[in-house]
Amino acid sequence: MDVIDIANERAQRELDGLLAARRQMARLEAENATAAAECVECGETIPEARRRALPGVRLCIHCAEAAERRARMGV
Ligand SMILES: [Zn+2]
Image (cartoon, rainbow, N blue to C red; front, side, top):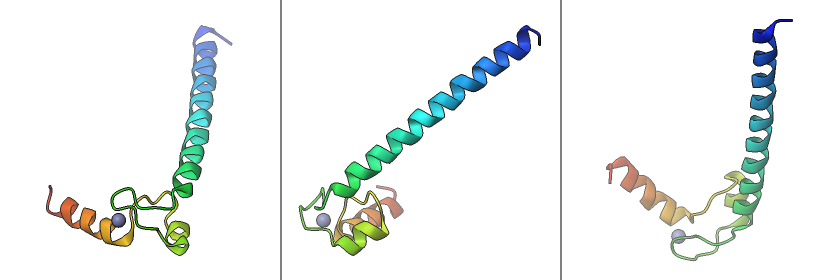
């Protein structure tokens, strides 16, 4: 095994660690977001069925539709 192999292996291991950490963070964020039971925009309760269907959803259906319309118009 030469120096390049050692460097590659080390880089690969660092990358693996980074990806694992990122996956764990994403999972924690999703759990936190799922716990948000109210729309962040209007405060209306988000039905559990909607939260279950869209893990991490932060908007009620009305605000989500409005946001989608805004996004489509490029605002
Ligand atoms: Zn809302």
